[in-house]
Length: 603
Image 1 (tube, rainbow, N blue to C red):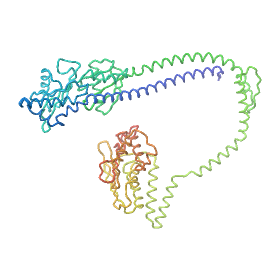
Image 2 (tube, one colour; image 1 turned 60 degrees about the vertical axis):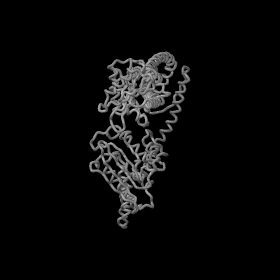
Image 3 (tube, helix red, strand yellow; image 1 turned 180 degrees about the vertical axis):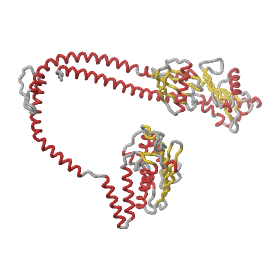
Image 4 (spheres, rainbow, N blue to C red; image 1 turned 90 degrees about the horizontal axis):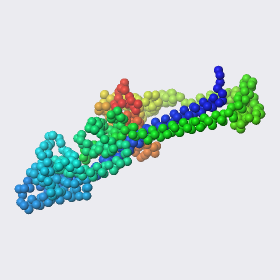
């Protein structure tokens, strides 16, 4: 087989390095895309929350206006009657009272231009003393159209109810009495559309490539961003957004006119407005693609220069190295002889290679002489190490021997402890990560039998295991730490009536394991603190796992459950327990043979 020359190898290495560098750039590019996407999603979600909070803050007065007849009895009484039938002084007083309350509520809120209430008798109360009659007629018309049976409790009209003023967004909501469903009045609030859009646009100003839609009842109220959308595109985005909200999600990848988009959605609780923000992947990755092209061009220039320099350098060292290789080929077979070369053409690097080779040859000859001794010593060391390995079956056999000795000596407690401990060790060392619930319960019973010997006549255990859950497959070793926590922190040694209840039942696709005791209990504030930590998306430290109330590792059990089943599952402590404490474990209810996903058992 023809061998390559040093020059060929050098050039090959150079070419390979360039290929590796190019592939590395591609990996970095893909990784940067992923990081950029995650960053953009986080940014959009953050902006969405800011917009949501801004809407709530800007329209905070709406809450007071909607509840005026609930919080102010006098105002409610005025709205329930026909003010025109009152005396002149009463009419004036009633009018002034309600108008003043409305004015007080919206004072300082630049987003609200006018608040008006029209009751069923046509009495008008407003922050604007000169409300046009056409406006009042429009409000009365809407009040006549609406009814509770229809289910319309609020509406927004872009352009207002009068003269098509596009700078106005009118909010309507009926006001109902306490004891009936009859509308007592209709609240009409004119919002400053321009002011609101300016506030929201300022929050979205940094999002160069994105677009934001704020809509209600499939009607777009605000569009923020440079991208224009036709009616079909708006309808598609609103439909997708509603689907995301119904699935209790916030972000999803969608396709709009064959273009990949990132869509983030949330809903304002106060107004019911839905906030949908989207940006295209093409716009998102535009900058990074330009950087990638510049890097490729720069790589090409550097590669060319490297080729020129390497060609010159290889000529200065190729000839001496070939002479060196020829000297090596002339050596005796199997012998590591020193090489003596006196070639003026040798560079310093080649001379270093020759010197290093000669040094290596001297050391290798020494190693070869010691090889036999070294190998024999290695076998002796391995033999000694094997003697110190402990076979788990030795421990099982030892425990069984102890149990037999207990039987012969008539010590049943020794027999019980040894057999249960042996069973627990075998259970924990089994290869499978999943077991049936029945097997897990049996292991817990073995543990409890040991505790009953340690603390005789101090506690009782009750099992309430539904028949349809006994064969469900669960993560192994999740109940015993919870039960052990009771003996560590729950029971009082002075109490002779300690109770433990272990319950298991299934609701749809979820399995619930409940461990309850009647011990000292946990303070409500401490329960809230522990539950908050259990719900967090992070890995807990050893210090946290060894706290006052969590030394047995409920955080570890919770973490394993969330890893296998998902973040909606896990451990929590009930807050409404009258006495003692109640641990609730929520798992996916997969039976043997059901499909399991990559994160654990499917739910």
